[in-house]
Length: 156
Image (cartoon, rainbow, N blue to C red; front, side, top):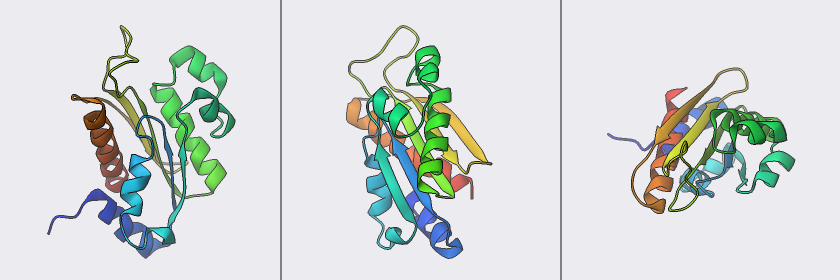
């Protein structure tokens, strides 16, 4: 029987007594929403931060201003610092971080609409992926959230 990634995450985390925290930018809380759609997720889901503004990334998650200045908020470097930050402030074992450009505005010559970075894992074992998703704003957000959950569940 097919299980959604959020159900696989529930199975693993509820059986291991491990915890999860999520830092979201472009997905605007959608990853957290999908996690909390599974009954019982409160046993492991500690915290979700929607750090849409750069100031929130810096002041709440501890992303270095130099990282945003040098690489941009939509970068592998920023996604990894968001992940490390959410793990630090929450004390969770596992984390997810998303940042990207959902469109239709915000693109640059080097960063197109649909560009997304997703980081997931623990403070010692993490992975970051780059994607360019297609479709409108809602489709990019939905694809990003789904892939973030798939990535985390693949790391167990």
